[in-house]
Length: 192
Image (cartoon, rainbow, N blue to C red; front, side, top):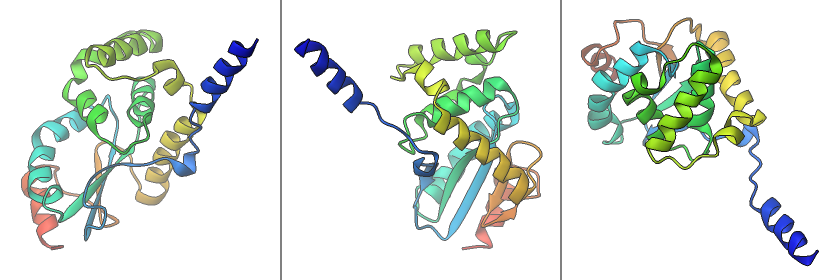
């Protein structure tokens, strides 16, 4: 009986309850940067994956790593697979972008399946193969994370009129030009 009580005490003391108000955004760059970029994205969106492949690396090198700007990735899932992947990317609540970046870089490896269950299996298998240590089912079923992801989407529509992904917001103004590095750089240079 004593062993069971010790196990229960240890088990419940290691559980972390995440309150949606305590959730950390996935942020890259200087927290105190003069320029804040918000990227509303859906993890199953091929245009978002292209942004991460074609624009983000140079943006990171020139603006985020130098402290001139920061980028906050916000969730705007367009389907159930993106919704579940968003919950997974947010699950560790450490503001790290490793899982998010891996999901975009390898989108074709896990975005497949004819049902939500099949898509989830592919996502779980992909994460395991990539070596991410995540309690997949606990992340998917965490109500606080789910609320956080859904509130990002609601905020995007309500406050920024987001209707497609990716949508970029720079210092609270919607970026309206074609999303490529050249256009983004022009907009950022005006703010430095």
